[in-house]
Image 1 (spheres, rainbow over the protein chains, first blue to last red):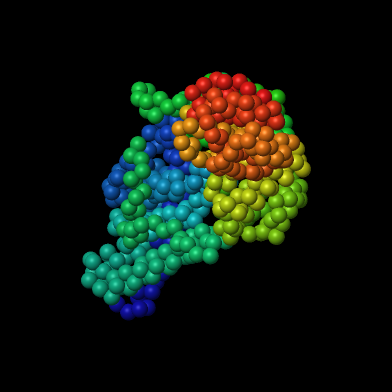
Image 2 (cartoon, rainbow over the protein chains, first blue to last red):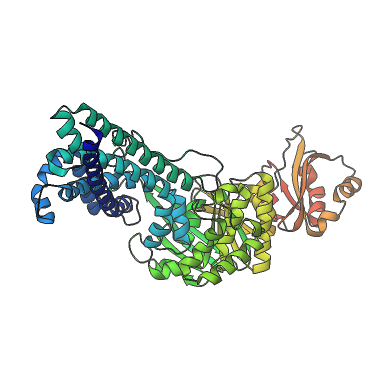
Length: 245
Length: 348
């Protein structure tokens, strides 16, 4: 296979991956952020302590997190068809990716928000701030460096998931590597795909770390940026330790 | 200005059964307008619970809290969330914390503006007020810095500026100097004193350091096991025989050198502090007096001294000289005497 044959294939695959990961990250962040914050607020001793809500959300998040993505994808097929009208292609792949990403991100948000010093919450309460003020002015801004690190982790995990989605018709780089590299023995194309993924992931990690560090260091001369553990597998080691419902 | 009556706080360690911890046990506190009131006690005495109950960060189990004539416990409502009225009342009570509790994501100026944002003040007015307050606490040049760039003392100054943003009449200080070195502690206490005088601010502070009470407080209370065991103005406390607070404010040591000795604690304040009473006593009764320990200091703006002296002979032999000292307006406590009632009787 020559480069001129490979180029359009690679371009299309990259675009598809970008679309899948971009949209699903956006939805995962928009959905996971409030869920993660709610998990902290409704927990015992939280500002909106509510055991029932906390347990329900915690259970949903746990189920979402514990299902292997490939099973989630298959299980959600009917829902995907209902939303997008099809189960094949990048647009269809966005649905399970986003739904897999929401609980993943929510747990990371929970960990990040839980680390905000309770004294800050108390200080704003003493000023007469309500819960919404505390969320907007304390919890989110103070956890922002960790939230950015969490987003980086989520993006990288979703790139991994998107490759799985590719194998069942989602398209993208994973699909390309399987179809050409595995099924047609086009080893060259497969290695190029691997290289593209490696470079993309490194760039995302670098950008995420840079942003988190820049925010974290505001004012401080030194100090490590918050970084989530085990970035390659996309599984944060400590995210689930906190609360199992 | 601040009155609590029958304030009780019980923590349940386990949800239904299990141990109960009584942090506050019927605390009656009365802080007058414009004074600096210190509550002192060891860790676990309930000081923190007390100050948190004053602005209802902690809900008291029973009892009432009145601040500036407003019964806050009546505003509390049910559940852990604070209703609008309570939040408004809180915005008129400033609070400073041991660990400053500044938002690291905001500049110094933005930290001071935070309470004003909550009050809904306009942007221009916010920054004017914030800069004015930073000037008041001596940090006008640090407005654009982040908290991480400041020293502990500077952070606490920002904390104080922030607490004053809502024009409070009352300032609560939760161990505000406990994380600071002695030098910085003095400057922060001086600032609190100045604010108290300039703005007529009523300050309720809790501390475990006697020096804090000594240097800034008009009144003080001693807490033990959730109860206030002594309270009053510093001057009154010093004039109270057997007062633990007075003894702690003015520790004098020294043991009797033999059995046939009488040991006295002599407290001087006001005019008597300037009289040469000990040499008069010695000359008048022709007795030898040993000084076992002594301290002189300014407490609450009063010159106060305390001295532990030893007279030869038993208490019975020294009734006349002790009477002489009392006539001079001194407060005499007989140490380890078998008739303490007698000693207390003649205090004034």
